[in-house]
Each structure stands twice: as structure tokens, then as C-alpha cells.
Image 1 (cartoon, rainbow, N blue to C red):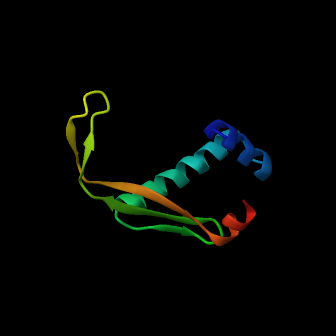
Image 2 (cartoon, rainbow, N blue to C red):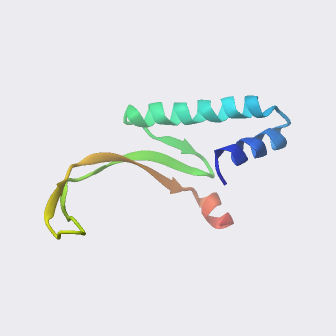
Length: 89
């Protein structure tokens, strides 16, 4: 399912226009992004938790040449499914 399909499903289930559903989804994405950028986490009971973790710097290899390259440390977004979601899948 892509974003436009999700918007259509939200609009249908909620009996709202696709424009309103798109606005709601964009607002949700913006709120989650802003919270994660600030170092917080977002917990939706029964669905899951969005959080940020740090990935340490490490060495990798260029697959073409085999040369060692340095991969910088960075922050990554993480999602952990909640119990209800895990059971339904």
C-alpha cells in the first residue's frame, strides 16, 4: 500500500474527502517527525512505538574493489510493533 492508497482508505473509512485525509496524514507524519527529531518517542497503544536510535560508526567494504571504507555514525528511526499489532499479523 502506498500513500495515495492509504489516503483513499482513510477517506473511505472516515467518510471524509481525500483532501482532508491527506491533510490528516501529513499532519501525523509531521508530528511524528518533529517529535523524533527532538529526541522523543511516539507511542500508539496497541499499534507500536516510533523511536530514534544511534548507529555507531563502523567499517564497511566497497563491493566492487573490496577497499575498506568508513561509515559515519548516524541516528535512525525505529518502529517496534505493539502487542495487538503483532498478534493480528
